[in-house]
Image (cartoon, rainbow, N blue to C red; front, side, top):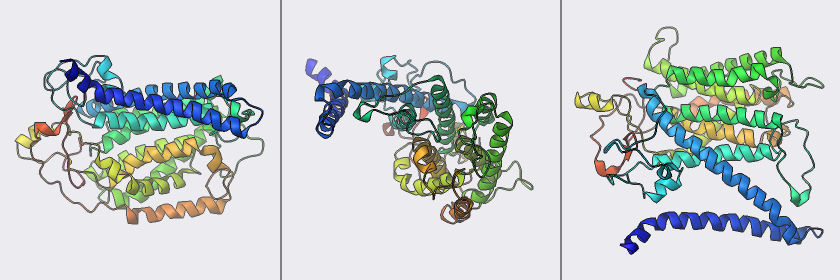
Length: 437
């Protein structure tokens, strides 16, 4: 019996040991290297600042992966009109998950991917999404807490190897804003990769979360709305500028979305078919693009789109490892003989999945990119912005979803695993769905 319990706990023990080894390797290894490079610092003096780094990174990973866990619930419940409150439960035996089983990533590993009560498989989508969201938000958090990311920021001297985070109310406000908006973008992406239309309440809430704080606290703009940065420009108190910053970002997102529609949703027609399935995909695309444009400004937005297009190709193998959620009402529609389940992701889903990654990279390395002459920004030459904007026109050529109809989805075998609150089918090629729920 004891051997059996130990065998069940081995995956979790191995994971915890690997984490501990990684932390010690960072703290001791980097402190040792720095003590050899900087003659004025002793090895023991560098242990404490490296421990601070490790503690901040560990806390961010835990907190941000918890956000990923919550977004898993949002992606499952919101399209079905269900409330996002309450504890998670097993859909087969309806048992409520224990608190220790809800620990991001580690909870799934400790259960070895199976329900504690009925022993049926739990989808691997949970730990993958928790890890991806946790890593992206942590990258933004570390870069901004250590004064490495925000353009035109008054950077303090990091003190050589004794670098440390510099926390203040303005920085925390900007970081919180970026994290919340990026989380909303992740929520949109996680719903859209299942081929399900974004709930109106989600994109309205997301746009409000992105727009209202900037109007109230214009410092969140970070960069101006003008093509060239005005002399001695400072965002504080510039509410008219903040309004123009929002308007130009949304207009840029709408224009780019219409350009990308040629490849991602070619049947979209806002005039002749405003309620069609192709048009609903276009509306979702513009909503997601608006979030990225509001975060970084319209000047850098074309580069974000081009990078997203390239990353959508590179990230397709990773996207294929994330099981597809059942669409709302899929079981009833399948029993009635109509095809309603997305079988695999196409260009639209791949682009939606890549957009949070590209936005994360821009936020994390914003100052470096902002100072680079060939990256579009409010301080780059106009021809740079124009060149990247022209590159966006070429993107639809490479992002074409040629599928035209949904193949029928066979019933799910229980041995393949299921979501905590839904099923976990695999699939094939994406298309304009017959019914966008």
